[in-house]
Image 1 (cartoon, rainbow, N blue to C red):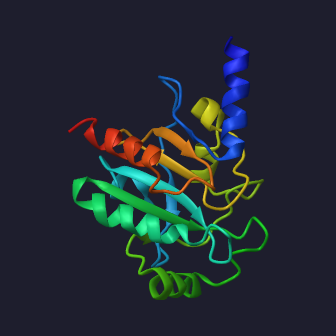
Image 2 (image 1 turned 60 degrees about the vertical axis):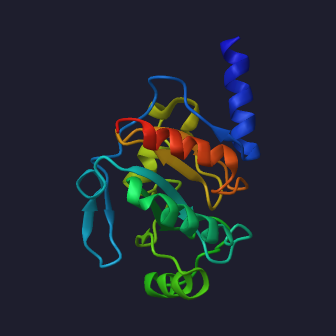
Image 3 (image 1 turned 90 degrees about the vertical axis):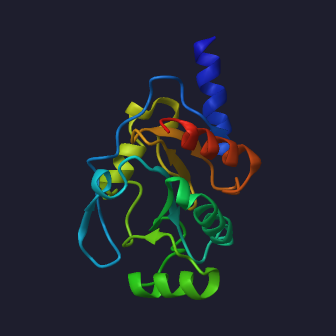
Length: 190
């Protein structure tokens, strides 16, 4: 039964479903450092302690790029409740994020009115993957771990810094199933 469940979850992840982890799974992202828009290092646990996060690898020339609208909508809707969207531009898939960090931020601001935090461009897969994405893809996240395979893969992280769900690229960030997960994570620990 356990093998079948694991296989089914992997198939669902590839298909873009929303996958909540098994109880007790989850690596902590608090110690991960990322590079802020201003170029300085940011330890996630320092800046986002106690917040619910939606971490997304983004690209401006992807078929899923219109998801920026939904990401911004979620950010605006829930930020006063301790929620933040974190965007990590990535050029790993189909060279769909070729711009400089400044060009990316300008594109997002002009075209999607993005106010959530965008970080410097990162690699999310392979040997050069950023430490954050190594943690997100790690075996410590159980069925939610594994290679990131495309742009707009979304990870919901709870107030405790642990991954609560992995949401495939085709699933809109504002899908009812995702909103339920966000609201559930916001309700925990309040």
